[in-house]
Length: 133
Image 1: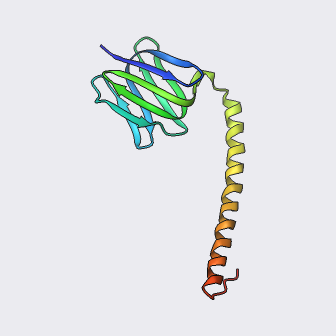
Image 2: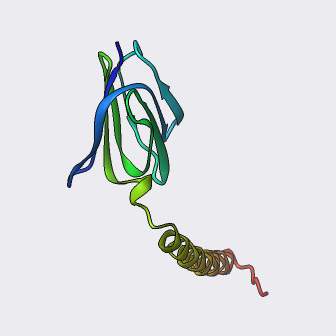
Image 3: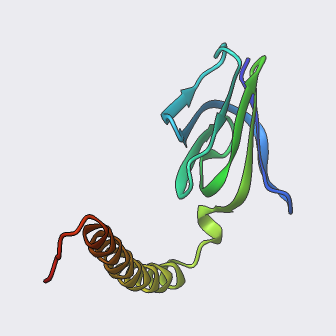
């Protein structure tokens, strides 16, 4: 006896079949699912990796971005906003996307810091203080 697992998005069924173990990152932390797990509904974390130990195919790995994990009577459904199986991912393209995201993140952090400094300067002006840098 095993788990019946389905990994789906709104666009397609990525993988479905019998499995002995599922590991998924939720917004509450990593969750491991074995046969007999109590019923649960959890939110999948953005940028998580899901690992399914399939009975016939070995390890199935996918990058998952948002969605939900449902466990009920040894049926596991991973309903992701978006997901890609590991073998579908172009590593070089993903590396370039990561570099672009890191560059964008830096400018967003700097912009947020500038907005916060402006807010603090405005608040100090309302209280009669003058704050110069």
